[in-house]
Image (cartoon, rainbow, N blue to C red; front, side):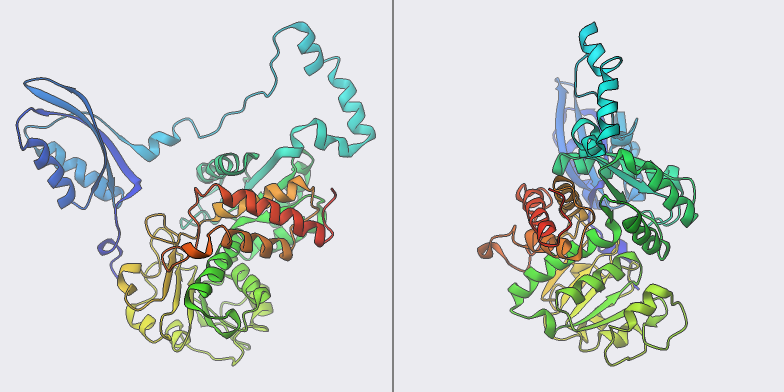
Length: 473
């Protein structure tokens, strides 16, 4: 295990903005900034609010390494006798004040005629039309362009089972991303039950309102059954992003890493650490894409045929098609002679020494977030390509590259479900968003703000849906 704080770098996720008044004397402001650097912070922005002969007032945004680091910086600001703190705020908490979403109408109601069309009596004609022809709901209601983002709060980020209310900020964030990256409307729904049957029934009851269902942060193995049964029960796309969004972006990164390193997927020995929702989906899509030798590990070590500890039906199914030599042992044993490590597990579970036993120039996808299984800084000289789940390192595996486009594409063609072929098509589209002459070890996954990604994914998914026979348009 390694001390993560030694390698963490300042992030906007822990930023504070402070307004200070200091004497207008040469060197005083520089002293303040040097203290920020000494405490591990980074100045993101400085705004001069006002200045006169006696003093200056500046608004300073500081990125810190953690909540504790930000508090330490603020404490030291207060120790300078020449500094007067006028205001300060935690920028992340400020962004979330009042929530991140609003609802607003698409139409204006400025007079009685418009009211008669939007509501009674005119609206009754639309209701009757949909009653006679249910498919017209796609044309005359929000169903055509609205996704339900649904959770029970049992597997939120790396925080675990924190409940539905505490999960709401993540679901709101997901809804914001749907809108910002694909123009798709969505609404967060946090269910106050962990009962599998209740969740399935509730989603089925809600389904007439929505054009697609995005399941989020539901713990494994329950999430597998919930998704599978909803796919069978509903005629609209059901997508568990923690599984398939992660898997699609990982595969996109692998496609491009193989081009950079001139290797073939079928030749790789791949070790996957983390046998939950994301790990299972990644294993499935890598196998579908052509991988032949995958060894899955969890807290009980290597998963092998005959192991009884820590198993469940999904793991039992996958050990039949993974670990071809049926080896047992620890994660360290699995990594010896491996070509790729894919971590979807816990901070610090991998050491430099373990990575050094892998084959030359290995692919390292260390995706535990916010603290990865091993920090890139520790292995930069021995890894061929490194990807993380963080935005402050190259090659961020971020689901936002997948879910807006794949859901939008499925909705536009009114797909009955999202197939494996559609997921593979999405992965290729994400990979192809980087031009061949731009590919390098630091750019195998496109930036999340690349405007091409969502549209390329949407188009690829629509085309594949037609090929797979699930498109209704």
